[in-house]
Image (cartoon, rainbow, N blue to C red; front, side, top):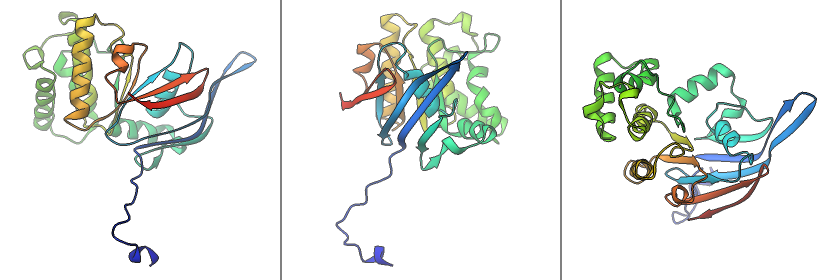
Length: 241
Protein backbone atom coordinates (compact mmCIF):
# COMPACT_ATOMS: atom_id res chain seq x y z
CA UNK A 1 0.00 0.00 0.00
CA UNK A 2 1.19 3.49 -0.81
CA UNK A 3 0.76 4.65 2.78
CA UNK A 4 3.47 2.23 3.95
CA UNK A 5 6.07 4.10 1.93
CA UNK A 6 5.30 7.48 3.50
CA UNK A 7 8.37 9.16 4.93
CA UNK A 8 8.55 8.76 8.68
CA UNK A 9 9.03 12.49 9.27
CA UNK A 10 5.60 13.29 7.77
CA UNK A 11 3.24 13.86 10.66
CA UNK A 12 -0.39 12.79 10.21
CA UNK A 13 -2.74 15.50 11.44
CA UNK A 14 -5.13 13.95 13.98
CA UNK A 15 -8.86 14.19 13.40
CA UNK A 16 -10.33 16.95 15.59
CA UNK A 17 -12.68 15.81 18.33
CA UNK A 18 -15.44 18.01 16.89
CA UNK A 19 -15.89 18.68 13.18
CA UNK A 20 -18.81 20.79 11.96
CA UNK A 21 -19.31 21.58 8.28
CA UNK A 22 -22.04 23.79 6.79
CA UNK A 23 -24.40 23.21 9.71
CA UNK A 24 -27.86 24.81 9.54
CA UNK A 25 -30.81 24.83 11.94
CA UNK A 26 -34.19 26.55 11.79
CA UNK A 27 -37.43 26.40 13.77
CA UNK A 28 -41.03 26.88 12.71
CA UNK A 29 -43.06 29.48 14.61
CA UNK A 30 -46.60 29.38 13.28
CA UNK A 31 -46.33 30.07 9.56
CA UNK A 32 -42.79 31.46 9.84
CA UNK A 33 -39.51 29.57 9.50
CA UNK A 34 -36.86 31.19 11.70
CA UNK A 35 -33.25 30.53 10.78
CA UNK A 36 -31.19 30.09 13.95
CA UNK A 37 -27.87 28.83 12.54
CA UNK A 38 -26.56 29.35 9.00
CA UNK A 39 -23.64 27.58 7.35
CA UNK A 40 -21.60 26.96 10.52
CA UNK A 41 -18.19 25.32 9.98
CA UNK A 42 -15.92 24.73 12.95
CA UNK A 43 -13.33 22.29 14.31
CA UNK A 44 -12.31 21.80 17.94
CA UNK A 45 -9.40 19.52 18.90
CA UNK A 46 -9.44 17.13 21.84
CA UNK A 47 -8.34 18.78 25.09
CA UNK A 48 -9.59 22.24 24.08
CA UNK A 49 -11.41 24.68 26.37
CA UNK A 50 -13.58 26.85 24.11
CA UNK A 51 -15.92 29.69 25.08
CA UNK A 52 -18.90 30.28 22.80
CA UNK A 53 -19.98 33.94 22.94
CA UNK A 54 -22.48 36.21 21.27
CA UNK A 55 -25.54 38.36 22.00
CA UNK A 56 -28.87 36.86 23.08
CA UNK A 57 -30.55 35.15 20.13
CA UNK A 58 -27.28 34.55 18.29
CA UNK A 59 -27.73 30.75 18.33
CA UNK A 60 -25.19 29.85 21.04
CA UNK A 61 -27.42 27.52 23.05
CA UNK A 62 -28.85 25.98 19.88
CA UNK A 63 -25.33 25.16 18.67
CA UNK A 64 -24.44 23.72 22.08
CA UNK A 65 -27.58 21.55 22.05
CA UNK A 66 -26.69 20.26 18.57
CA UNK A 67 -23.15 19.41 19.70
CA UNK A 68 -24.55 17.63 22.77
CA UNK A 69 -26.98 15.58 20.68
CA UNK A 70 -30.00 17.12 22.39
CA UNK A 71 -31.26 18.51 19.07
CA UNK A 72 -30.62 17.61 15.43
CA UNK A 73 -29.52 19.93 12.58
CA UNK A 74 -31.52 20.48 9.41
CA UNK A 75 -28.42 19.95 7.28
CA UNK A 76 -24.65 19.76 7.44
CA UNK A 77 -22.06 17.49 9.03
CA UNK A 78 -21.60 17.13 12.79
CA UNK A 79 -18.95 14.57 13.74
CA UNK A 80 -17.71 13.97 17.27
CA UNK A 81 -14.80 11.62 17.84
CA UNK A 82 -15.29 10.38 14.28
CA UNK A 83 -19.01 9.60 14.66
CA UNK A 84 -21.70 11.31 12.58
CA UNK A 85 -24.17 12.15 15.33
CA UNK A 86 -26.38 14.13 12.94
CA UNK A 87 -27.34 10.84 11.28
CA UNK A 88 -28.24 8.96 14.47
CA UNK A 89 -31.75 7.94 15.47
CA UNK A 90 -33.24 9.31 18.72
CA UNK A 91 -32.49 6.09 20.62
CA UNK A 92 -28.93 5.98 19.25
CA UNK A 93 -28.45 9.61 20.28
CA UNK A 94 -29.74 8.92 23.80
CA UNK A 95 -27.27 6.05 24.23
CA UNK A 96 -24.44 8.10 22.74
CA UNK A 97 -25.16 11.08 25.03
CA UNK A 98 -25.16 8.87 28.12
CA UNK A 99 -21.66 7.60 27.27
CA UNK A 100 -20.04 10.69 25.80
CA UNK A 101 -21.57 13.98 27.00
CA UNK A 102 -21.40 15.69 30.38
CA UNK A 103 -23.87 18.60 30.49
CA UNK A 104 -23.60 21.48 33.00
CA UNK A 105 -26.65 23.77 33.19
CA UNK A 106 -27.00 27.35 34.44
CA UNK A 107 -29.62 26.38 37.02
CA UNK A 108 -27.99 23.08 38.07
CA UNK A 109 -31.01 20.83 37.22
CA UNK A 110 -30.50 18.73 40.34
CA UNK A 111 -33.23 16.44 41.68
CA UNK A 112 -34.41 18.29 44.80
CA UNK A 113 -35.44 15.19 46.79
CA UNK A 114 -32.11 13.43 46.18
CA UNK A 115 -28.85 13.87 48.05
CA UNK A 116 -25.70 15.10 46.35
CA UNK A 117 -24.52 11.48 46.23
CA UNK A 118 -27.76 10.29 44.59
CA UNK A 119 -27.73 13.13 42.04
CA UNK A 120 -24.17 12.29 40.98
CA UNK A 121 -24.95 8.57 40.84
CA UNK A 122 -27.91 9.04 38.47
CA UNK A 123 -25.96 8.82 35.15
CA UNK A 124 -24.18 5.69 36.38
CA UNK A 125 -27.49 3.84 36.77
CA UNK A 126 -27.49 3.54 32.96
CA UNK A 127 -24.12 1.74 33.00
CA UNK A 128 -23.21 -1.89 33.81
CA UNK A 129 -21.22 -0.82 36.88
CA UNK A 130 -21.95 -2.69 40.11
CA UNK A 131 -23.30 -0.87 43.17
CA UNK A 132 -19.84 -0.97 44.77
CA UNK A 133 -18.20 0.37 41.60
CA UNK A 134 -20.78 3.16 41.40
CA UNK A 135 -20.10 4.12 45.04
CA UNK A 136 -16.35 4.26 44.44
CA UNK A 137 -16.83 6.41 41.32
CA UNK A 138 -19.30 8.81 43.01
CA UNK A 139 -17.19 9.25 46.15
CA UNK A 140 -14.05 9.88 44.08
CA UNK A 141 -15.84 12.45 41.92
CA UNK A 142 -17.40 14.30 44.85
CA UNK A 143 -13.98 14.43 46.51
CA UNK A 144 -12.59 15.89 43.28
CA UNK A 145 -15.05 18.82 43.53
CA UNK A 146 -14.40 19.19 47.29
CA UNK A 147 -17.81 17.97 48.40
CA UNK A 148 -16.95 14.64 50.05
CA UNK A 149 -18.33 16.00 53.35
CA UNK A 150 -21.64 17.12 51.79
CA UNK A 151 -22.64 14.00 49.86
CA UNK A 152 -25.64 13.28 52.12
CA UNK A 153 -27.06 16.81 51.77
CA UNK A 154 -29.96 17.66 49.47
CA UNK A 155 -29.72 20.65 47.09
CA UNK A 156 -31.69 23.00 49.38
CA UNK A 157 -29.04 22.40 52.06
CA UNK A 158 -26.27 23.56 49.71
CA UNK A 159 -25.20 26.99 48.43
CA UNK A 160 -25.49 27.86 44.74
CA UNK A 161 -21.78 27.25 44.22
CA UNK A 162 -22.00 23.87 45.96
CA UNK A 163 -25.02 22.90 43.87
CA UNK A 164 -23.09 23.73 40.70
CA UNK A 165 -20.17 21.62 41.93
CA UNK A 166 -22.60 18.72 42.42
CA UNK A 167 -23.82 19.33 38.85
CA UNK A 168 -20.22 19.28 37.59
CA UNK A 169 -19.57 16.05 39.48
CA UNK A 170 -22.67 14.55 37.84
CA UNK A 171 -21.41 15.72 34.44
CA UNK A 172 -17.96 14.12 34.80
CA UNK A 173 -18.76 10.94 36.78
CA UNK A 174 -19.15 8.90 33.58
CA UNK A 175 -15.78 10.14 32.25
CA UNK A 176 -17.40 11.76 29.19
CA UNK A 177 -15.66 12.54 25.90
CA UNK A 178 -16.94 16.12 25.94
CA UNK A 179 -18.23 18.52 28.61
CA UNK A 180 -20.73 21.14 27.43
CA UNK A 181 -21.63 23.97 29.81
CA UNK A 182 -24.47 26.45 29.23
CA UNK A 183 -23.83 29.63 31.26
CA UNK A 184 -22.38 27.60 34.19
CA UNK A 185 -21.67 30.75 36.25
CA UNK A 186 -24.74 32.73 35.22
CA UNK A 187 -26.64 32.15 38.49
CA UNK A 188 -23.66 32.53 40.85
CA UNK A 189 -22.07 35.34 42.83
CA UNK A 190 -18.56 36.36 41.80
CA UNK A 191 -16.76 34.29 44.46
CA UNK A 192 -18.71 31.13 43.58
CA UNK A 193 -18.27 31.80 39.85
CA UNK A 194 -14.50 32.10 40.32
CA UNK A 195 -14.51 28.77 42.17
CA UNK A 196 -16.46 27.03 39.40
CA UNK A 197 -14.22 28.45 36.66
CA UNK A 198 -11.14 27.25 38.56
CA UNK A 199 -12.69 23.78 38.70
CA UNK A 200 -13.35 23.80 34.94
CA UNK A 201 -9.74 24.87 34.38
CA UNK A 202 -8.60 21.96 36.52
CA UNK A 203 -10.74 19.49 34.55
CA UNK A 204 -9.27 20.82 31.31
CA UNK A 205 -5.62 21.19 32.27
CA UNK A 206 -5.12 18.30 34.69
CA UNK A 207 -7.59 15.73 33.35
CA UNK A 208 -7.46 16.78 29.68
CA UNK A 209 -11.24 17.20 29.41
CA UNK A 210 -12.56 18.95 26.31
CA UNK A 211 -14.96 21.73 27.34
CA UNK A 212 -17.28 23.93 25.29
CA UNK A 213 -18.86 26.68 27.38
CA UNK A 214 -21.57 29.15 26.40
CA UNK A 215 -21.17 32.39 28.37
CA UNK A 216 -22.04 36.09 28.32
CA UNK A 217 -19.39 36.79 30.94
CA UNK A 218 -16.07 38.12 29.64
CA UNK A 219 -14.37 37.03 32.87
CA UNK A 220 -15.59 33.48 32.34
CA UNK A 221 -14.60 33.51 28.66
CA UNK A 222 -11.10 34.64 29.62
CA UNK A 223 -10.58 31.27 31.34
CA UNK A 224 -10.95 29.47 28.00
CA UNK A 225 -8.17 28.99 25.46
CA UNK A 226 -10.30 29.69 22.39
CA UNK A 227 -13.14 32.16 21.82
CA UNK A 228 -15.86 31.37 19.29
CA UNK A 229 -18.12 34.30 18.35
CA UNK A 230 -21.62 33.88 16.95
CA UNK A 231 -23.92 36.67 15.79
CA UNK A 232 -27.32 36.30 14.14
CA UNK A 233 -26.72 32.61 13.55
CA UNK A 234 -23.39 33.04 11.81
CA UNK A 235 -19.87 32.27 12.97
CA UNK A 236 -17.91 35.51 13.08
CA UNK A 237 -14.58 34.24 14.36
CA UNK A 238 -12.73 31.64 16.40
CA UNK A 239 -9.56 32.93 18.02
CA UNK A 240 -7.09 32.08 20.75
CA UNK A 241 -7.55 33.91 24.05
